[in-house]
Image (tube, rainbow, N blue to C red; front, top):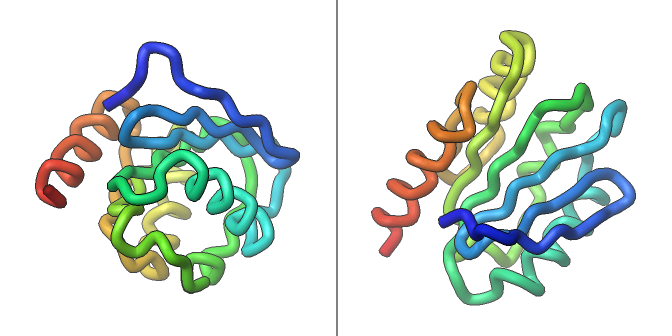
Length: 129
C-alpha cells in the first residue's frame, strides 16, 4: 500500500506523496483549495495512476480551506480514484471534513490516525478488486 520510498511531487499549493496504491497530500497553510488546485492534482494522478485503482489521503496537518463544491467537478477518474480518507488533527478539521463528505461521490471517511487511514484504504481497495 505505502511505498517505502514514495515519489514526492511539489506543487505551488502543497506536496503529494505518490505510493503504489495511494497518494497522500499535504496542502500548504492558508491555501484556498478549489477547482484549479484539484485540476493540477488530477494531472499528477493521471501521470501516476492512470488505469489502476488508488486512494487519496488528505493529510490536514495545516490549516487551509477546501471549497466543497469543487468535489462536484466532473473528472475521468471515476473508475480509478476509489475513495478519500481525511487525516485530521483537531475537532474543527474533523467537523469540516464531515461537511465535505456530503459533496463527495466516492467512498469517504475521516480519521485521527494515519494507521486508521491505511486500514480503511486497504479495505476499500480490496473491495474494489
